[in-house]
Amino acid sequence: MSIFFDGHNDSFVKCYPPRHLRTVPINKHAFVHGYPQAHIDLPRALEAGYLGALCAIFIDPPLGEESTCLQAHNREVPEGRQPDLEPPLDHQVALTATLEVMSHIFQDERITDGFKVVRSYKELTDTMSRQKLAVVIHLEGCEAIDVNLEALETLYQAGVRSLGICWSRPNIFGTGVPFAYKVHPNTGPGLTATGLALVKRCQELGIMLDAAHINAQGFFDLAAASERPLVVSHSSAFTLCPASRGLTDEQLATVAEHQGLVGVTMHVPDLIGPRGQELAYIPSAEKLYTNFKQCRRGISNRHQQENSRTELEAVIAHIVYIGKQIGFDHVALGSDFDGCLIPDQIKDVTDLNLISDGLRQAGLTEKELEKVLYKNWLRVLKASWL
Image (cartoon, rainbow, N blue to C red):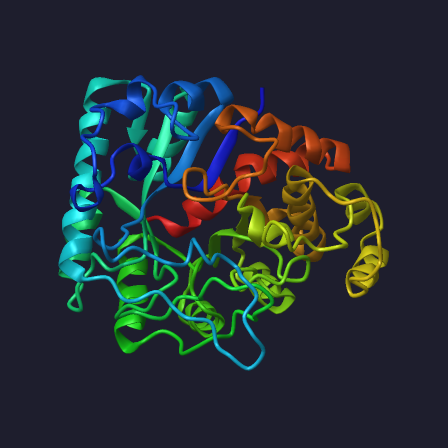
């Protein structure tokens, strides 16, 4: 059975939505005992060989102020108009909700030996070697952190070891990239002075920084300011599908230059376009692997017809494209389970073997496959943590 390390899931928030978002009571210890409504829970994770993950804490605005982006997700924006960003999230709402979700994680950890919140590379590898789930607490957007970075110190001591500077909205640290289709990720200003201070302090503490959801200028600002691997936890290749959250070839090259990685998302609109607007041409993963230069030429001719790729095949094609473009040391998994629209062929975490099987069929060697499935994540976490 393959081993998997996933760069992004929202499963704890799915199991334990913060109080300000609940319409019904939560099921206590749902993650531990099993929660069929989620893509991941502990029993299915261990069954699947899913032994490590960045487990995100993402906070939506209060009920009545809900995000609109998922209803209009990746729609094509009329020419000449900039796509709308989501509004900022209140710091106190974010901090309270973040602590609440973390409390549920720690309550679960106390009643099982099936997973551990890991705070060091040794804890990470020890936990995975025992066939247990290594949970890396990740903040998706830093709204819970104040301008003086005081909350950062507390959150670090509590176990946070990975931060996504922005989600797809502005905050005091930078500006996220809006959800849009056929829109370049270069959509606004970069990191603020407070954002650069956050980068510096995270590197001093040993917190990995994540450029997923940040706009292009913020991405390049982070690359210039950071001395650690440049990580994008869940994204895609803009060349294959022009979704605003995808990474251009220039961004991919920058990731490789900084010894980082890209976790490939399973969010369908970022892979083949919104359902109903799917791209006419995405090369098969096998062709990308064996004849990359020829396939790259074909990508520019979007009128070129080929048998349509399934949604699962598109995940594999994006992994292979990035691997061939910048090397298989720099691509991994970043599923976004429980936070996205996953391929029809994948019902939950127990179907991850379809990804590994597809990568083998595409031609990856066993060494390349191990890097993609988990070893690349271990490498960048080791280099990012103290």
